[in-house]
Image 1 (cartoon, rainbow, N blue to C red):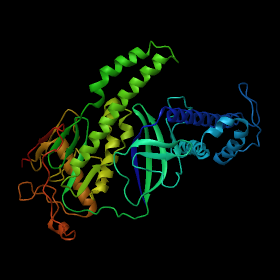
Image 2: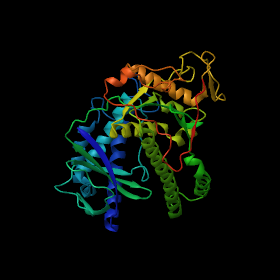
Image 3: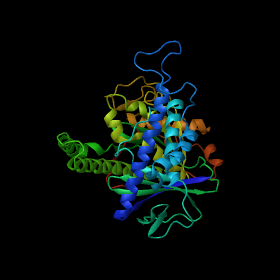
Image 4: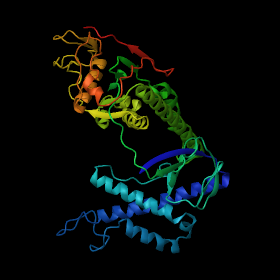
Length: 430
């Protein structure tokens, strides 16, 4: 089963905007009530069985079952008789709100995520239609239950044969968007290893260094607009809570944050397509980027968006029939990619690699990316040539590895193809 998500910009009327905001407000009330019900049930079980707490006591009977999704969905049906405003929203939209809360609750226990938060009017930004009617899409509009036909900007056509499974309406700083989940009943095989291998090394000095000797600087997405963002946040401190001026200023700050996020995501896509070009295999280090955002370089790591880039790179590799794999990250900068000798631990200020065994010299990041490539090829069972001065480059696939693929090696791409990517070439000196 192939599943893709397409995002389109909506152009609703004033009445439709009012209906969307009303739906978000009612979904927020349902979320907060259901979350409070779960928290009260947990708090009522904190006191010991044989002793009474001086701070709190049972407010819920001891035999009361936990309010899971099925119980709260049944209560939602009964609540519509008491609160008629719940009928203004499609029933499946409210059920999906409870399902999202139940999923967040399970992730908290199973995956160690944080406790689900209560939502204010800024945090509740989307709701889901799990089903749409027959033929809900036109070239100029899309039809939603309770909302009718809403005009949209169809930036790209929906692929033929795909079925719309669900639609999520999202409120962003720049307007309203719809995210369509498209499915096609087909099995797509994963790409196989072939052609030219390319190893990548991510870092703070250079965003990415390739095994072909290309280094791309890390752009400062947040730093370029940080001064403007600080001025707006400083003005926000003096605004009265709940006032219209504070709300308008919050919208300006949100639009600036979205501009930074959109610029970063667009650059990641362009860089991924550039790295995949003329390569048949892509190897990266298996890094837990969450830990990178807990140190003293947390702001730089969050601004670079390494985790998002790796996810986008994996998707682009799958789309372009390029093999993608992760390798062990330990010791990539301490191993010579030419002879495999251990060169010792390098301090961060040391940006050059020099092997005392084979006298191989290059930059530190390029050497690490070449070691990543070598490890990826070794995991596949391919041979790695270790002759720097020979006809083939270091780490290139041997003849025995290319015979089984039926494909010849493609030449490495040296130009970036992206105007604002700055790349430098480094020669390998024996």
